[in-house]
Length: 239
Image (tube, rainbow, N blue to C red; front, side):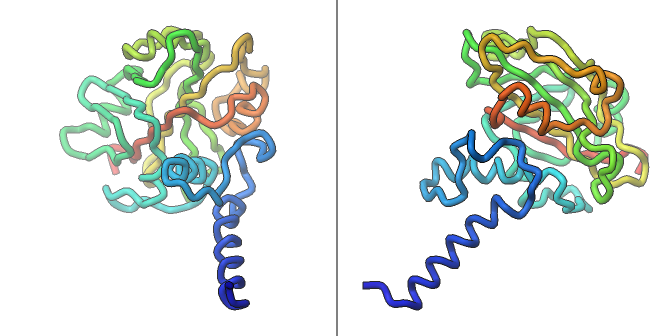
């Protein structure tokens, strides 16, 4: 039989687990429509829960001051998404190194990357989002989210081969963080598109890439949680 002290300790642990998902109120999914729970004990389920917590805490200000990722930034990536630029293969969360002019190339030279998702199902459609939650800076993201790329109706069979066969709603623009604004996160999020659901931007959304309400977009089209996420961090190449 458990003592009163042991019961109180168990209750405190449960409250701490609940706090994981309650600390930030900018949820990207309605809690009553998804199955995630911070109380889940199974390790196989806990991993995506941690990723979701990192995803929804997109505005949590942990300033990257070096080429080392914080634990929060590292936990964002999930689902074996792969992004390939001409001179840079990204398959995990990372900070783009300054050597070989990689930061300059990703901002000024390279066009839209190839995107692979090994888990894509041939008969399904997907939505790809690339956004910056740190515009104009991570410490003061007053223009977040900044939409860098948005493609819908992506065919699963093409996605498995690194081909984005879909309908572009927002043309790709490269990461161009302002000088002296620190590191920015550039987040790739892949969603499964519900069948027979035409996805579009509203007229106000079409007028500006900045201050995009990603949560409202996800909710509007019932996209749910992303099936795969990937991010890299970079800063202005002149800094």
